[in-house]
Length: 329
Ligand code: UDP
Image 1 (spheres, protein in one colour):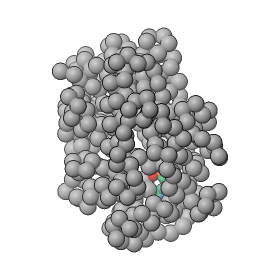
Image 2 (cartoon, protein in one colour):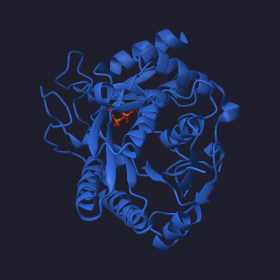
Image 3 (cartoon, helix red, strand yellow):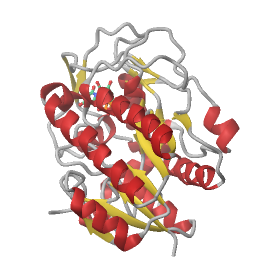
Image 4 (tube, protein in one colour):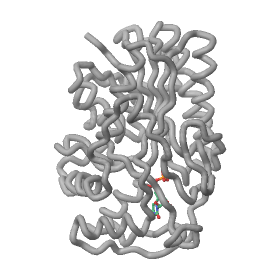
């Protein structure tokens, strides 16, 4: 039995990670409080319900399952909300990670894969974002993730905690079999909101800011397919099991798309118009976040094969239309 503890396994990215871990011979044990995740998304291994702020529960779960590694996805992850409620982000993300790391170290589970974010780089105009770029987050979400990266370095030095840090760019798409997919309540992400607007589930999408210093005035992001992203995590886990040491990897494609370009692609994939209006900037948004690194490809052997924008929207659209698969509390 090769258990991997997957915090946030009931969420969007975590549930996809569980699927790919199971396909690679691991048993994903989901640790989730199901506050934003969904019990119905836990399909590929057991659910150990619990909260990262509950240290006793963490110790219990490590003792029961004796995982060989941790994949830590559980976190609050909305940039806009993090600007309104920074305390929640600092408390839940940072304290939660600290509790998890301490429980892992106490249980001698010393391989740790962490989901970090390109939001740790901040708003750096004309700077190539690779793993050595200085990190200067401009929102509490990015700040909380950077703090956890630093925490991992400290525990590596003190306790030999081996870790791989993945800095994600924008994750999109869904499992092509539509067993799991992206479903947030409330939804704040561009692609699912757009698909809702197309289906008339909401009035219209608001484009947040059209006066950015980009060719069409809207923000630019680097979108990566969720299945490609979680496959990198399995490679990261094997990297740690092979004793290759602590490493940071960007996970992005290097291609940037503006909000307007995402809208155009969605219209052509779905053959339907996206109703939208133009609104103010959303506090905390960076102008452009595009990866400038191929380290994951060259060192990890990552082979992203689904991360072109139309494929990602097509997979998201398939999942989105399969309403029977959407979750309920
Ligand atoms: N965005 C938008 N309208 C929305 C949601 C998002 O214009 O209703 C923009 C947002 O400003 C950003 C991009 O879409 O430039 C991606 O935002 P998302 O929330 O999906 O991911 P983030 O980049 O914040 O992680």
